Image (tube, rainbow, N blue to C red):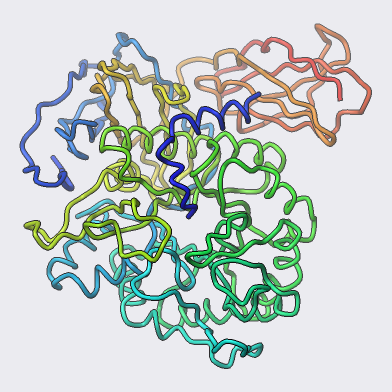
Length: 594
């Protein structure tokens, strides 16, 4: 990850990024805190003639008085009081989620498997990967070779003496990883068989590069084919050890050459060439279905991914875009989504830093990652790294202030203590299963009150609410014909889970706030989702006020990309919402002239 100590000024950076782009379960406690029973926040369940639908609640507060703590169950009923209305509509489904997790760096695995007694290690691994005993981490970032968080010197899988090369990869070996990285991953899969691994190289072997150094330079043209086979051999070697690699990125942070630890410069045209001409064909020839992601760098650059995806041959073989959080803001994900709405994206690295305390760091994570990034199309959230020691290492250059999910501390009774990252990820990862869909939920303000909701493969629902303010937030949650009220504590996150099927009581409300954006190939239309909507109908006219012609029916999300608009023609768009009980009135018009 980028080591420029950018996170020390996180709030100012994100504000700049936004401006640029917008023009009883307690899984753990903080260090030296003994878990104690906590009082339930104010809840207002009301008896109802309907069959009761119970709702389970877990809360984490910035003051650490509650840490992923189960609260008394509440229930849906005909409640009408609440200051902040949250509509949840499971019939509006967005992206399918792949997972939430962290990074199993060399140093994390070394700490877990060489510096902890077996009983303590098993306990911590269970707290990390088990859904019943822990937070159910379901996605792991795994460096292909050394990153900055490594115990010992930097390495690749085919290092050669200075002046020598190995273009046939005769010396390729993952022997280094066999000591503790592979055992850590094997045990993680035993605890969560649904685990997905995103592997990423920080540098090819030095002999493949223009500088003959791991810390900078770029890939020599004559070694593109060898570099692609390096990926193949890595995926095959891990698979042989029972560790399937679900996806790879082509380069960690391709616009940053750190010097003091492995890194490489790679331009968009280079990634496009590597993907379409070398890597995708090599994986296919080897019978491997490993996905390929582009970029794998910060939110402050949207042009890189767009440039790669603009190459049709490259776009056809890559899965989508990977993002880091160290500069810019999650609104960048929306820019790339709007350019290529058929291409998914993942948040693949974001570290917590010691410069932020538990409260501020937890609130940032909930706002920017768990809610903001997922609302802007991320299919995963991955923190960096899994564990560190009490001096935030081991590391070789790079980040000396990164925190993990846990700190290995032999002086602690359990041999470790939790950090805020454990609880921010846990508020989501414990409840949202791989394969869940994000569903519509109202209530989202940048760095303010926010919500995100999901529907699991078994039909159960998850609503995550973040209240960053210094006062309690009294929410009223509507789901079909049912409601519940709850008081979310000040500076806290709450996760609500329930089962059942949404029942509508009326036709949907009229869509509001429709906006349009014109580019060279389409008109992008967006509007706020309508409570109770199943689908939307988009209509268009060449005359203000109609009559309108239907251009799209059965639209499942509150956005539409009109690729049939003719350049030089002015259009007037409206949209209506539909469910089995009827159709809403048309929205106000949005005018576009491509």
